[in-house]
Image (cartoon, rainbow, N blue to C red; front, side, top):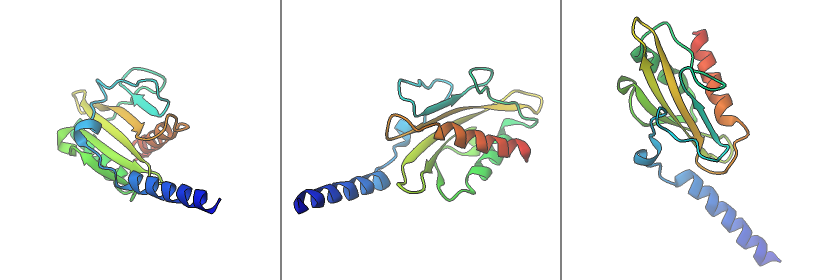
Length: 151
């Protein structure tokens, strides 16, 4: 009985280290939201201009300023980092980690210039592990977006 518990504990600790230390390949995770495929998992949130239940809003400033403002806003959170891209690229992928287990979620964003000092964005947010995130990716992104709209 003790050895079974020991093996279980070591396995759990090993999985925890794997989650924290597993490399994040930008070639795999830096995905353009405009071409992303949702798949069958329920751990994905996609927001596109003029489409779906949560269409992307329009902003009263250009895409480059939107990218800079968004990046500055989300990087204030110590659990968020940049995987790939820069605001000047108008295409970035962020990694947001959960508090306790440090599971990585990948948030790819394309900032779209609409001309005339107007812009919008396209989002592909997904969890790396598991099949359901209970709406975490959607809620997190919409909260960020709401903060950006208020500013």
